[in-house]
Image 1 (tube, rainbow, N blue to C red):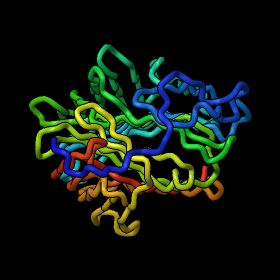
Image 2 (cartoon, rainbow, N blue to C red):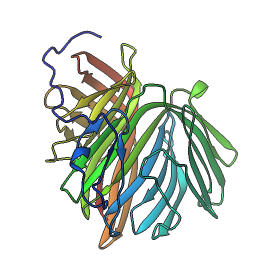
Image 3 (cartoon, helix red, strand yellow):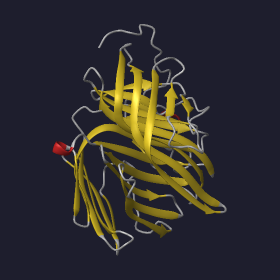
Amino acid sequence: MTDDHPDVTLTHEREVTEPVQLCLPGGTTLNPLARGWSRVPMHDCNLAGTPGRKKRWDYWAVLGPTHTLSVTYADIDFLGITDVWWADLRSGRTGGRNRSVPGAAGISLPDRPGTAPLRSAARHQVLDLTDEPGGTRLSAAWTEADGTPASMDVFVELPDGHESLNVVIPWSDELFQYTSKHQARPAHGTLTIGDEVIAFGGDAGEAWGVLDVGRGRWPHETRWNWGGGAGATTTGEVLGIQIGGKWTDGTGFTENGIIVDGRLHKLGGELRWDYDWDRPLEPWRVVDPTGRMDITLTPVHDKHTKVDAKVLGTEVHQVFGTWTGTVVTDDGAELRVEDVLGFAEESRSRW
């Protein structure tokens, strides 16, 4: 890498370097010492208090050249959600199984993410997300809507020293979110739909694991952007992309950064997102006004979700495709990516 941008703008945000509790005693007020970002998970998410505003989730995705899949395990206080989803990016065929649990009965996520397995067993869906030496295993079995049996067994590696983007977004002392975003984690395994076995990683081509951990107290109405991806730069570095927006506006912190060969380079400013909500399969361009990022996603598939229950509801466009463009590291090196696997989304929720 060369020093292409000697005047690179570094983040102004406070870096957290020691373990810290997210909340003050009582679990409803943000601990001032928790504000900031870290390269590895440092926060103990000791949420408590009256049900309604607390949200806890682990979301996994695996990006491959022909297929993508995801697993969600969530407790949003009044509802538990376990969800498996997959898509064939060539044909547009999709499947999976969603399960909603009133009151989130039996759905439990630890205060310290990654310290306990996440399990759920029901008639048509069984999930088991377990940390093992070197990474996390995503195992699931379910019945498709047409009765076809399906399963997955995918291992998402966590290489030694691989960094993630962990940050607390403070809307106020009472409303705040801790997020731990992992990109560019190698993955390998299989997705089986009936007699069809789809391989990820190895001889089947590159595959990348994504993890989104969320623990916080949210306002009723929210909008956010999120995007990510991974692959090789034109000069051979392994690049992970982690970007977001809207929900972080005005808080003084962002979830923006790049991971280069396992090392996080934090972007402290808000990004400019340029896309059309009504035409989600048109390109999505994301630009850093200080010059550290200019990338465009060319989508091939839109996962459109819409639920309207009057007081509660959500609508999401999550698009999958490939990123092309340039990013700049903390030391001023400009890296170019061409057609690396990725995704972007906008979510609008009342929850």
